[in-house]
Length: 438
Ligand SMILES: Nc1nc2c(c(=O)[nH]1)N(C=O)[C@@H](CNc1ccc(C(=O)N[C@@H](CCC(=O)O)C(=O)O)cc1)CN2
Ligand SMILES: Nc1nc2c(ncn2[C@@H]2O[C@H](COP(=O)(O)OP(=O)(O)OP(=O)(O)O)[C@@H](O)[C@H]2O)c(=O)[nH]1
Ligand SMILES: [Mg+2]
Image (cartoon, rainbow, N blue to C red; front, side, top):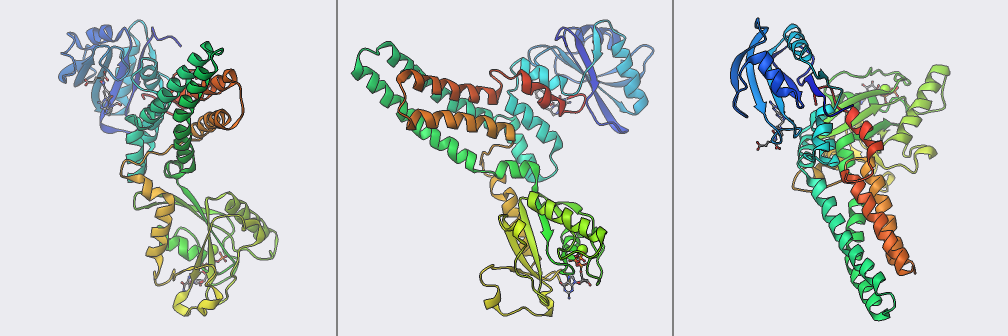
């Protein structure tokens, strides 16, 4: 890949639409416009032009000379009628101009990154914004695409560099013990609160939950009303319900938007000593899915209560739901310890409390109000490495040289977060997430 190339791609979706946007970026953009629309329009002003000669379509043309463009290069947009035939004809006409080629997925964002328009966390935020399905996901992704994480991590890195400068200065005066001691104390005064901030940031999983969706598995004995509950929450007949115990075999998954927060809810086979091969396989899948979940919703039949999930699920976060409460509820002393939500999938009683509980766990609290949370495993990995280095700095009895080295390691991991350093290996993975044209 060479950035001397001029790239072109449709930036809007694949299907027919009223209007489609074709993006062009790179040094030959001006030449492309001269060939396709004649005179180059005024920067950043839409002009209506025939596109191609003879005209392939009549559309709006936008010209963004470098560096004031999304990629930082010369860029143009052709906003044309959104049929497959128009888009294909116009893209081919662009490709007929010398020095142009089709953009690979994420190529525009990659150029924006390479030209310093976006850092890596902003690029990731942009990818999340394009994929956002709920209101809270949109808010989080927009904030990240506009630098919420970049500012946080750059601020931390700047503090670290200050501490590093102190330590390095101390090394220069290593023979004056009081100076060395003094800078060590001053550096620690920077590092200790920074370490606390990183710890608190790492302890908060709400951003990842919001980005990925809270994975909830409905589990319980057969016939407890698990599938009925899934259908009630999904507001459609997603799963088969019957009076027969052992109805559900496969895992059935629905995506819910609970108050703007995404929840991936799975219904599973009732867990009992299996009868027959198919049911046993269903139970095996139920347990595997439940073990993998963020949360298990253990559904208890009020008319035939099985109070506790089986041993493999004991370590999970479990919310208990006492279903069929329309038949009456067992005496409270039987279930005070597990504090179940009391529900009826049939009448809808108690569903709202369940939805509130799930929405809270799915990250509702992080969704608004400027709360900033990391959103990806990549962030967690770098932050853990940075924290570990800072912990060694504060807690071990290290020489000043080794302490300075720990600060360098911590700063390097923060630099990798924003893409300042050492990122070649992660770039491919991040940009490949995009569709063509972004
Ligand atoms: N038609 C169209 N709509 C779009 C985009 C686009 O590329 N084209 N976007 C694409 O993602 C988003 C808007 N984001 C954009 C971000 C930066 C620049 C840009 O030209 N930035 C320049 C100039 C800024 C200015 O004039 O104030 C810069 O940063 O230097 C354009 C769009 C959503 N809507
Ligand atoms: N009265 C009453 N009946 C319910 C309620 N929820 C479910 N049922 C009934 O209980 C029976 C079993 O419901 P399902 O939803 O199929 O139960 P399940 O837990 O998915 O069962 P398996 O898939 O076999 O494990 C059906 O006859 C439902 O109509 C409820 O809240 N109240
Ligand atoms: Mg079922």
